[in-house]
Amino acid sequence: MNVKAEVTGSRFDLVKWLVVAALVVVAVVGNQYYSAEPILYRVMALLVVAVVAALIALQTAKGRSFFALAKEARVEIRKVVWPTRQETTQTTLIVVAVVLVMALLLWGLDTLLGWLVSMVVG
Image 1 (spheres, rainbow, N blue to C red):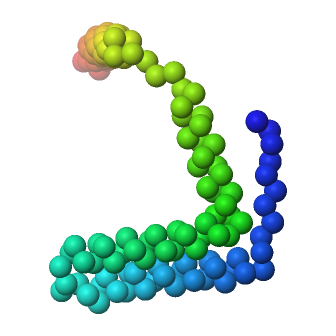
Image 2 (tube, rainbow, N blue to C red; image 1 turned 180 degrees about the horizontal axis):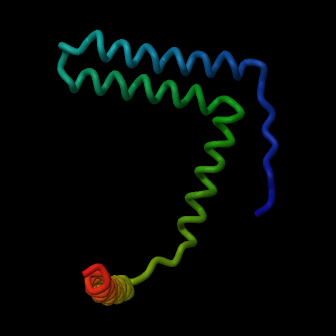
């Protein structure tokens, strides 16, 4: 798992990122400019611009490495052994019980110390 993928960037990566940034700015300004239009049309336009910007960003070296990281994370998530419903319920009940016991202990300690301080102060 210690394999590092070396991704070399092309000379046009900066241009691609500038295009992505310009698309984001156009989307934000366009959403403000067309605020009188129905929300459905604006959302659809924003989704189209977001997909185009994401596709352009994935063509850069950092975009490719991000996509590889996302694929590896998905593989790792599939390896996780999730607790059963019974295990989750039991663990939750144990946590609730410990919190209640600690709350009672702290309440008792606070009451005792308050009583001692009031005896000393008078």
